[in-house]
Image (cartoon, rainbow, N blue to C red):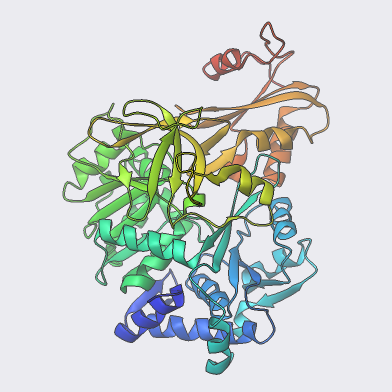
Length: 508
């Protein structure tokens, strides 16, 4: 019986000690080397960090970052990944939510760490990687772990302006990874090409599928995703067989006419998620890689990652709309109408998720946890939590689930879940902005910010770039003399959306 991801790692190391686990542009680690690193880092942390406490990790895009994550787990703790490229204000928000005492960084990010609003201990990865392993100490630390222990906290956008930390347990992660493994038929011969930032939810597949199966993971340099020839050279040199990428990443390569530069010769399976896949771009992939299995995934961080999947059946056309499919093993997906009753087949309903893959809730935020993780209204007999996604869905006659957009003001943009209220909350902090409204053009995947006041659009853009991650910054800032209003005095959202194609605001 597996009680933590450490059991997976121990088993895989025993079976494939000399097989490459992780590699990047400069380094590689066998499973044995990776395991030894986790034990060294874990031995150092376990000597003073209390079991069950959070350890923030801010390390770069390299093979040692997953070792830091699992080193934290070896110490009986849970990790909180942070991206040093985020604005300092955003990183400080995460620190204030977690209130952790320890921040593990690599030398590359040490100066950034020193500038943060953090009064705990900064631990430099390179200085502890050779710590002698203390097996007794690690056994005592691991004894505190159960299936329900937190494994990590990953932050998503929050409507109040503060990011939400989603707490995922070992059990939830293991259920999800096993379900994906079965659908993708992953084994020790597979090589994953990592695209996602290692602090982002999509990276858990690239990290934990290898630890579960003995597969390998290649951490691809970020700059190569805009250089198709170089990217495909890497995929072929490393013999990459599997990609778990954002839909935006798949789309980008098709837009860049990547297949004119070559083809990934070893690729066998591609899954994508994060946003709706435009099938005119998926068709390009299918035509160039006819023997590859393509899998569309859907799901929020609050359900570990993806809760449904659809194996694309046949070549798509430009106007094909992919279903989001059927639930993965160990997921329950139900559709609820506004009155809390079940939607019938063909009826729209809010997508709600149940099962052991649900997150433990939001870190240090019981109000938001209780709002979105609720008792299943269809079950009055015993405790059964479900997560309300805020997405609309509809079951087709063939039993496949379709996605029908957001119920509220939360959107998916560039693979990230964003709350438009947070965009507006940030804008309201800017001097000389009177009114503002953030809207999303889903067709062109563009964030709009409409505003009134004397602020200059260039100053607004600069402020956003300092305050929020790039994917949350408006792509178009439109100044209006006044907002269009409805007879009841509320902002006319449809009139604003009509400006997506030809904004009538004047430049400032």
